[in-house]
Length: 461
Image (cartoon, rainbow, N blue to C red; front, side):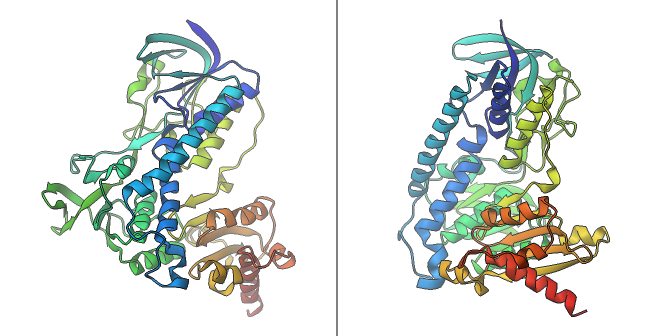
């Protein structure tokens, strides 16, 4: 039996960063991965493929420049699933190679196979070569999630699919039904709408992306409708039928929706079935999420869990940080991180990114705030890029002028947010943006315009 100081299960963002933190601390580390390649869901079927597909859609469709060259402008007239898949596979291969090289460079032993607990300190790995047992003083679980399934939606991998099966579709559908108005469902809705697909989005809640700022989501909803997306909010699917001509979704309200294909994107389930958690004295909830403390420790003091398998926010960037913190804490290394300042990036079209509080949260907390808004259309770079629909919103305390939230919708939002993030974390005020010179022409100028807009509202009172 081989012994290690640290065993990490899962090579996604959380597992990879946990393993590297352990190796950098001089520990002997093993990383167990069920697939034949490293990277987990993030690189192989989730984050990287979907964001690469989005980039391919925007490029090939010419979507971003149709405002300048006209709605008929396209880089490629007939876009196929093969066109999208080609770029996706290229990026996946590159990213897995980079990840493998990083693990190797740090002296981390990668063990391929399915892991399960024998007891709290021993793990059995089964693969094509047989069964092997391993022991470690510290174990970190980073097994991620998989798409949830429902008996109401019989997946067939062709016309009724989940987000892992997108590229298995034989062709781009004319009409696509998307069930689920969360991040994944809305992102794919935007991509297919940009391709000219008629998308029908079904969501049982009254609005999309309930954790995001209402004004920003309202702007996104406007863009979706403007792009011929039909939104069926407050609706729930009762059953789905695979027909000779496509797919029919029967709603609880007795409505029927027909399309060429259906994407089921209602939640994700933790990858814990094969771990045999009870053998380690652990358990997961009904959605496969493992309960942890603020430092990602399970009820077994030497076992930690990080990443999507512990639940919200299920962002690759946050999973990386959780993995690093879990390993550092387990090894007694001081670490500082504040979840309140983690940024969110939602790769819709246009993309959304935000940090801090929303107007709704501040209203509930009785915090006196004011808002400053800048519009891409009033910024030279917005006109140059052809994105005249974006906006940047600064929320700040009326009395102290401290930044409380930054909310952006528009291309480049996820990059642009980091300026506001830095000022906010350093406890800067909105006056920082007034006194700072930004390169011209850049989208960063939105910060200065929004700051003036917000401060002008105070002077009028």
